[in-house]
Image (cartoon, rainbow, N blue to C red; front, side, top):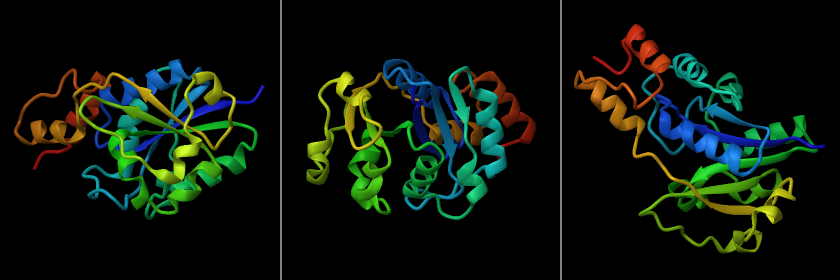
Length: 206
């Protein structure tokens, strides 16, 4: 039986319950073996993270629950983090696995700006996690890849797109950093172990 993996990338600056709940929803609803969370080294489409790669990885590892795994390959690779490079590498490691790359509605709408985005479906499926208030943009090049049923999607190792409505918690890393900068507590926005690391390292404060 082949392995079914979810892949969720991000800066995780810091990781919070919104990230973790999304990963668990995808894990359970798609019946995956695990979801790998990949912190980026640096990103082409966002500002440079505030915490160092090692600090972001440590916070992520402290937040994990069964079924969620921290994957540090983009940090080890260094430089710009391009999804296509990661998917190629993972496909080479697990040629028979079902790879399912998770992205939010905002990321989907920006997909034509991604590096070599037309090649992503050669290596993985795409799972679009929708949220209220964000309308999905039509991407004609990927229209034929859309699946209407979970069964159809689960049968594919790569090449398909699934829209998965998922309750999203209204939490953001930007808001957490702003609260900390203002001297406020961030308990319950992120796991207690992450709060402990933030306090110990005096992260996100002047």
